[in-house]
Length: 88
Image (cartoon, rainbow, N blue to C red; front, side):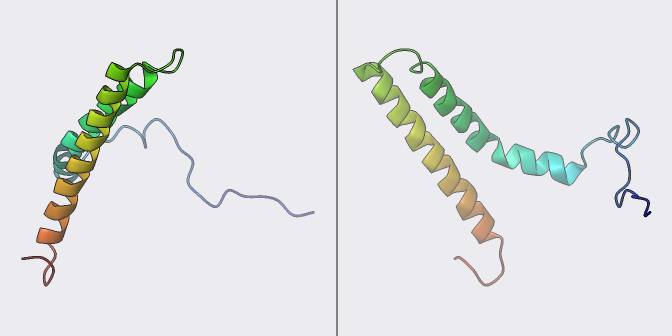
């Protein structure tokens, strides 16, 4: 009979007690406009879950989708601007 052993380290409270690095915090800060736009879109969609969407709701959702797309575009342009040989 073979014994089964774990191939990975156990997850303990001590291993989860680390703080994010400065680079990770900076990455989160760079993505924060996109995160806020996505939360706003989700809020607009949640408001229409239990009722039919009114014209105002539809406009709110469209505006939120445009904000998400704009934030993604800005974030994507920042990422390509920092890649050597890509972008202007």
